[in-house]
Length: 74
Image (tube, rainbow, N blue to C red; front, side, top):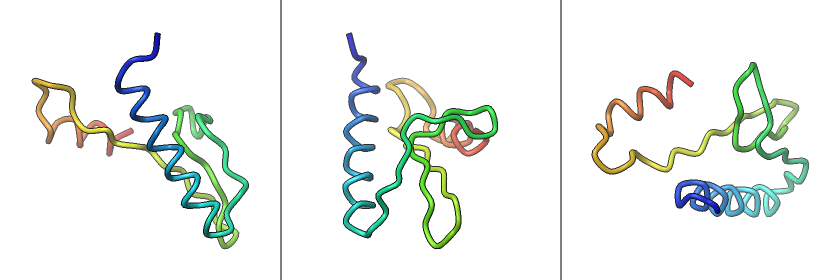
């Protein structure tokens, strides 16, 4: 069974990939490892690699500032 956070992350990744495709970026890798960490999307644009992490926000009861710091550190 898929968790709600995983389903939201997948839907957001789908939307981002469609957006990138509309802007002629079609070589997109999903859930790939970069530097030992899994990133949601990896693509190349203008000969530069870009790795994207999707922030779905904090879980209920968690401090938003702390969650943002952890995502940023990741």
